Amino acid sequence: MSINQFVMDNEKVIRMSFFFGMLVVMAVWELFAPRRALTVSKAVRWVNNLGLVFFNSFLLRVLFPAAAVGVAAFASKNGWGIFNYYDVPFWVAAVASVVIMDFIIYLQHVMVHAIPLLWRLHRLHHADLDYDVTTGARFHPIEIILSMLIKFATIVVLGPPVIAVVVFEIMLNATAMFNHANVRLPLGLDRILRLFLVTPDMHRVHHSVEDDEANSNFGFSLPWWDRVFGTYRDQPRGGHEGMTIGIRKYRDPKQVAWLPGMMLMPFKGKISGYAINRRQWNDAEKKQDE
Ligand SMILES: [Zn+2]
Ligand SMILES: [Zn+2]
Image (tube, rainbow, N blue to C red):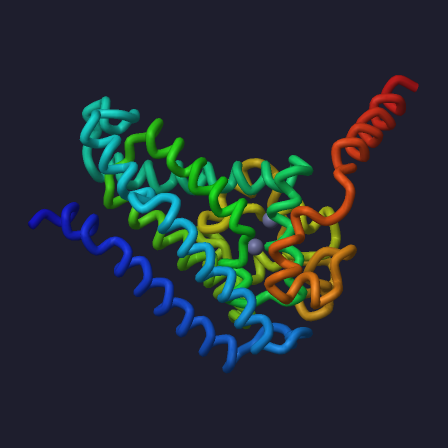
């Protein structure tokens, strides 16, 4: 049996094993070296955040049983996508695919912050009042579906090797759990790791209630995109222990820490984001004219 076939046949088991393995490792690490004190009880956070994760994986399995791997295999069989069309050495195609797919995730993350309608979905991830390993997988089901469709489109255009897709998905999942973890890393180690991996201290800045801090450090796995595109921010102004995590407007645990409130978050509040942005835009234009 080829390695491709093995990975295709056991893809779900492989991904689940990495998910649970990483969850246990980070959870134990959080117990022994926590970075911040939690504001909501861990039991409430874990039951609700992980409840959402299980619901999302069930939903994806029902909606897209073939998953990203299936799309990659289909593209490869039909010669679709850049790396299937051109004769590119396997390793070049594999490494380039992982890096490009990570870049697309970065762009997608900037987009869900920039477009008010999409921010409604993404704000569930940010409304978490604390920051721990379960935050890393806490996304609204509609955002999960949107991400999946973007991933499918990327795969069809790119034509990545099947293995690269599996490696990428495991890497994204593992790094999201690592960099959302409430863990303390020696500062020197954080400095070195940050050169090629998004660390917990780096991504925590992105979960600040401060707008300028939340609009920085969009990367999930590779830290380079933030540096290249000027969205990198070294540390939060208030320090990691002093900073406030979450969204200023949404502080009621019933709404942000319990599943029913979490599911309804995108539909709360008037759709005024466009109007507000439009006004700010007009004001800025007026100022320029003066
Ligand atoms: Zn974000
Ligand atoms: Zn995050």
